[in-house]
Image (cartoon, rainbow, N blue to C red; front, side):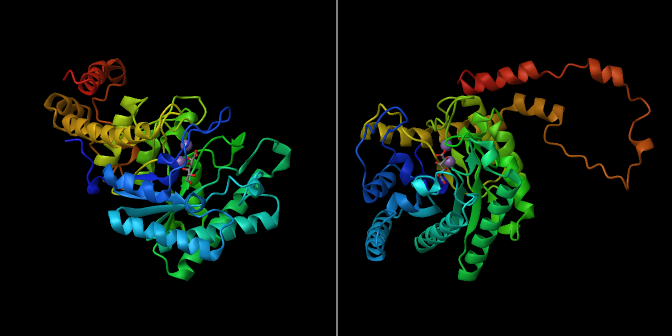
Length: 382
Ligand code: GCO
Ligand code: MN
Ligand code: MN
């Protein structure tokens, strides 16, 4: 029942299952895994697709012929397993050249190098058949506020995205961009700290239709925000081009925990927004196994992400079919939409003659009961 199927569109990045458990205080606890072996492992456990950064597959110093050899070997693994290549992205944070930013660096040569590197990563994604390209500006930010002009940072970032859109159009690629926000880490503060900031930037771009967002559970939670609210807004605006599913404790470093391992209730409402809201894009798990795990633990981690999603999807179905819950929601008018247009209803017609402000203020909403029903449902008592 909770076995993943291709239509569930579950994907993992090479860097997620390939994460080796390094952290700022300790070295790797797991050996590297060949990307070809990752493809086979993901296919074995029932994932639909795989994603990558340019340098997860091709080392930054690879020659063109080494690159082509690596890429054709990887393509062969995709063909053998039927695993889809779904999303490509670019590492603009690892190499020391990006220590003070990429698209927003003060150094024009570094900005140009970042764009050039991204163009090559777009070519790689297109060659593998990817239609989504994620941009996460991990180093676009500051510790020393005097060192950057934050308004200029917006301009530089916009210019870079405009450039990349023109490139995709010029090449005739069928590809869209998804912008991923994070409030901090590795920088003290990162520009465009939340998904809302990117949703506001997009209409100012030259090709807004080509650009959406890639919200991440951990990142919005680090900022203390409700993840499913921002996902709902992006979806309503037609801008949810991709999603990074994981889990996170509020106020911590970026934990990238196994999906739904920490916040069951928030994860439930997230799955509800995605499933009821008609999201049909990939369900990507941008998470990694605990540092304590070996390869078996990594497989358990990946299977657990998919299993938990499917369990919560089943719970959403149960919620939507629960007569008592649905009756309460109908009485609360949770899903009803009565349009209020100025041309039809003037201010003096807004209120019924018997409208009673005090009575509305005194009325109980019954939310304690409703919330307990959700708890009972999620804990399996109901
Ligand atoms: C992080 C980010 C990354 C990005 C990835 C895609 O906090 O490390 O979430 O995992 O999602 O670089 O661009
Ligand atoms: Mn992410
Ligand atoms: Mn993260």
